[in-house]
Image 1 (cartoon, rainbow, N blue to C red):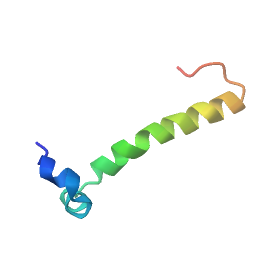
Image 2 (cartoon, rainbow, N blue to C red; image 1 turned 60 degrees about the vertical axis):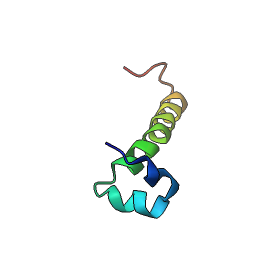
Image 3 (tube, helix red, strand yellow; image 1 turned 120 degrees about the vertical axis):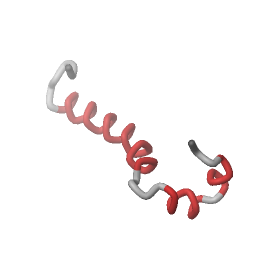
Image 4 (cartoon, rainbow, N blue to C red; image 1 turned 90 degrees about the vertical axis):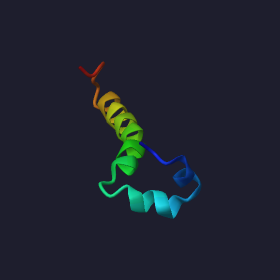
Length: 48
């Protein structure tokens, strides 16, 4: 469970995320968008 008080304390939040899951989740959207853009540029109509 997330301690909501950490949302106002970025350093404490980063320290409590020992496995880097929050950063990974935050970066996931950008990775998907980049992959989709590269697929389009490579001429793929859709990803399956």
